[in-house]
Image 1: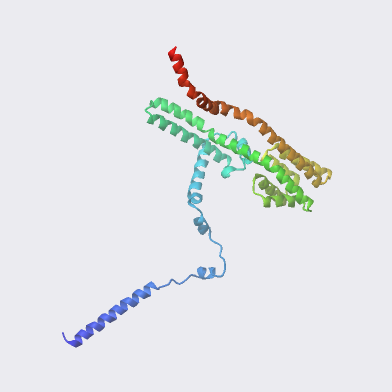
Image 2: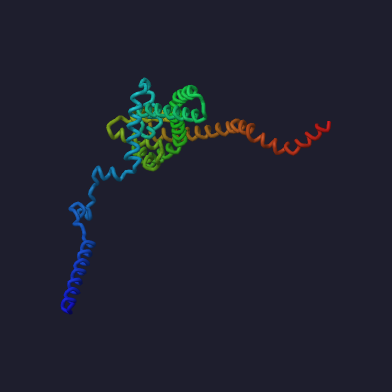
Length: 311
């Protein structure tokens, strides 16, 4: 091979290598031309589309919750609908837990019964129980499981009422302070709702929203009392409506109601304190006293056995 051919091959190899390297660098540094939307988004906040907003939600909100809602709706239509008004009233008093509608609650009852019945049947069959007995107990579990959502709803209603009774005196004090400072009653309700986040202040905010929509204040307050279903709230609303009709100062009414509610809360606390010894009696008898007897009389038992054995 002559020198000329050698240098020619070397130059061609270098050019080819340089071309490949340049092409690879160009591909690596290739930048996608930004779209008009992306360039515009650098200067202005563009609202997200519905698809983008949906994709930002967690999987539970996008898939699991809608699927469960559809299942509850389907099962709810299969259940009896004779007590829909009663269920709707209970859900309102409970504060619409998990956004359940009456049909959803009926479906939840049926779903709970089916799950309990299947679990009871599977457990009994795994313990080699007779098939007929397992099926009968499964049907019993199906019927009993439907009461679990009712127990859950009653428990929610009980705790919500207790929370409202506990929070009402403090909220009344705050309303009194706001009215004394010169705010109107509606503005005072809104101020308390902005300061705290609890079931009572949520109802205060809802009352203000209803008044802004054109509902009379008396009707909005009655709606709040019906949604909470607490005797103290009913009394407070009745006094406010009566004072509004007679033209009595709301500040004076709030002062009186605040004092009465504080007295009522103190009486309830004293009542619970007096019930405590009676409630503690049964755990003491069942759990504490046997342990004390075992510790105190336990060392003497062998001596008693020896003494009676010697006789």
